[in-house]
Length: 220
Length: 298
Image (tube, rainbow over the protein chains, first blue to last red):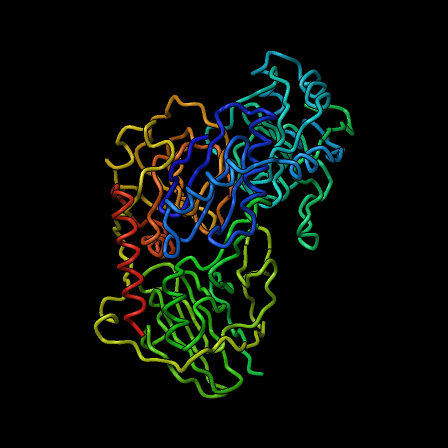
C-alpha cells in the first residue's frame, strides 16, 4: 500500500498497479471502513486505489494518513467478506454496433478480429463490478477478454448517449447518462441505470457480477 | 413565508450551496458553488450559516422580484446590477434586483437573508446540471421560497478586507501542487500560457495551448479531486471542476490549490491562465490567509 497526496485536500491510497480481485477486495474494505467517519469528506474507490478527500481547514494530512494506516492494519475483513460473497448477478441487454456502437469496427480493427467476434467475446465474459465512478452510477467492470482491450480515444467525445457500453484499455463499463467521455463505444443498453429516486442503491452495485446479452444482430 | 420570483433567469442561474459530500463512491461529485468563497462571504454578510443556498449566476445575471422586505447581497463578479457588491442591501416588498451581462468574471452570487429553501437530495441544495440532481437551471416564472438559515444580524463589510475582495482578471496565475503523475511530465504545463475554451463548464475547464507530449506511463482509472489538471492524449489539459467526474484515467501533472478554486469559478472563455507550482505547505498557508480575509470581512 502506498499513500501520497493528490491535492492539498486529498490522499491517493494505492494497492498496486494490477487490476485484480485481491486489489478489489482491499479497495472495498478500505472504502467501507472509512465510510461515514467525521474527518472524511468523500471517498473515491477505483480499480486498485481509493482517493480520500478531507477538509484541510479542519484536519491535517498526517492525521488522515494515520487513520488510513490504522484502518488497513486492523482489518479482520469478516463482514466485508460476507458482502463480497453475496454478489448478485445482473444481465445487461445490449445492441452492439452501428449507431449504437460507433467504435465497434475500430475495436475489431485494433484486435485484428471481426466485429462479430468482438461482440461474442464481450458478451461471453462474466464481469465483476469493481467500483462506481467517473459520473453518477457509472459502473466499472473487470474481466474484459484481453483480445479486445483497446486504448481510449485520443480526445474525449463531447457527447456519449445514455446507456452506451464502452471499452477503455482492459476495462469495460456503461454510461448511465449522456455525458462527455473517451471510451470506445461498442453498443448501447436500454436499461435505465440512472434512477435518482433510487439513490442509493443503484441498479448495479459494488460487488455485483454482470453479463452482457446481445439483443440484436451486429450492424456495421 | 417570503419568496423570490424569477422574472428572467439570465444565461445560467442555479441554486447552489457548498456541495454534496459523502456520495463519491456512487460516482456523485460534490457540485456546489463554483466560487465557494463568494457564496460563503455573501452568506456571512446577510447573517446566514455559511452553507445556506443562494443563486449562482453565470456570465449574464437574472432579474428577481421579492414578495416581502428582504436583505440581500451580491458577491463575486460584477453583473451590472447598479448596486454595490459585498454589501447587504434592504429590498422592499415588490422591489427587485436586475442583473445584466458581467463586467468582470464568470459568476455572481445573490444571497438572501434566510437562504433559498429548496429540497436537499443527498443532503445538499446544489444543482448538478449534468444529472439533474438537485433540480435544474432557473426559468422565468419560477418562485423560490426563502428559508430560515439566518443565524445572526446582517453585517456591513469592514473597509480594509472589502478593498481586498477577490477580483477576477483576464490573465490569471493558478497555483498548483504536484499531481499524482507529476513525475511523468516535463515542464510543458508551466512553460505556456493557456486559454480557456468555450467548451468549459461546471464539469471542467478545457484549455487550449501548445500540445503537451503524451507521457509513457501506464494509467489505471483512479479517483480524482476537485481542481485536478488532467492531460488526455491530445495534450490539451482539462481542469476538473465542481461537477467533475469522480474517477478518471488521464494522467495528472498538477492540482490547483484550494485557495485558487474561486479563480476557477470566475474564469471566462478566452481568459488566459498560467500555472505556478507551489509546495504543499505554501498551498495550506494560502488557504489560511484566505480564511483570515473571509472572517475579517464581517
